[in-house]
Image (cartoon, rainbow, N blue to C red; front, side, top):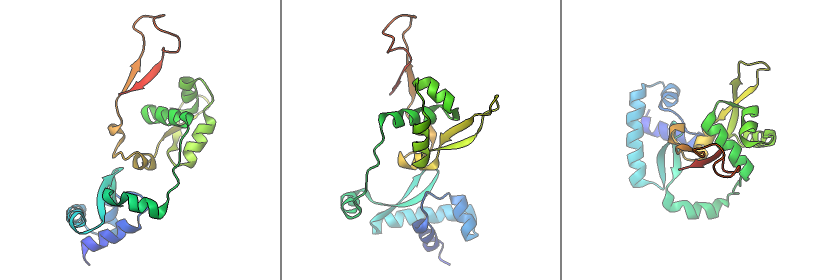
Length: 184
């Protein structure tokens, strides 16, 4: 069996990034052999293909090269999934404060966020990750691998730093400015 071709076949049928451990397990070979073959496959694709091997969301995936994006977009005519401001707010809160309960999200936003959480769950951007060990055992939410993939992140550590913009003295600035969050 040609390991590089086998990896190429597995990556072609995978619908999400695949870790070297999962590939090694499927092919019954050591992880180091998979990692070496992935390096060779990536180099070969770089020179000889309209595809590329990318490392994303903790794994590897085959993707089209950026120079063919316009042609692929015209061919597939993708529907852009637009997100409302409220969905983006809830997604940011979950991403930066996970694991987080719906009540904690509501507390930050000042409004009910259950609809936004349902929408984000349906889009596979957030998921239930457990229950908080407090009375009532509320559900905890966190981001998914699909979130990382959608925002082209390898890990949550790649999120931009979050800075709180709070007045130095109580009563300084407008009430709307207090508690505002800014991203760098």
